Every structure is written in C-alpha cells, then in structure tokens.
Image (tube, rainbow, N blue to C red):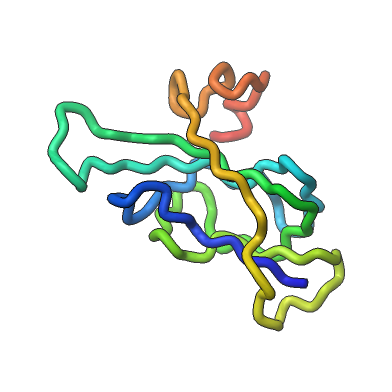
Length: 131
C-alpha cells in the first residue's frame, strides 16, 4: 500500500515551513519513532513583532514503512499541503499507483537551544550531520 506525507498546517497563520533536515534516505526501512524531518516555521509575516515568532518541529513516524520518494530536501520551503514524501508498506511495491492514505506521523514542537544544535536534541555529533 502506498502512503503519502504532506506538510501539515502547524499553525493557522502558517503558509510554509523550512526543511532544516531530511533524516531518512530513499529505500530505507523506517520504524515507529523514525525521524523524518526537522522543520522551522516563521510566522513573522502574519503580524509585526519585536522578534520573529519562529517555531521548530520534528515529524516522526507512527508505523513501519519504506521511504520510496523524497519530494523535498534540506533548505526547501514547501507550502502547507505540499507533498514531502511517498512511502510503501512493502519494500518492492510499485510506486506508480495513487497513495491509499496518509502516513501516520507525529509532529512535535521542540525548543531548540540553538537551532538544531546537538545539545537540543540530546545527540552527540548531530551538528556535523546537519551541515
């Protein structure tokens, strides 16, 4: 079965998000809790502020899938509703059919001490992976 992932509207004023990190690679098997994307949402265009209202999010999986196609990369700024990735429930399933449903994911808002630094995520050496 094919599954799709589109950028959810994380805030009513959100138009797009910046993809900071795409953690998975095409062809990978991803399990429950598998990291997909780290995103930054900047809402400064919605209303004037003294400092920009920036929020950080991580999208993770709630089911086992195979990543078959990535539609965005680090640095891209997709609009809400844009396709981020295509998954399948079997590793060799043809990907030319229409997706049956959305992939089950969790979106968590996170507080980064310094945008995506290794201490904020509790990961040693993660900063080198994100450059």
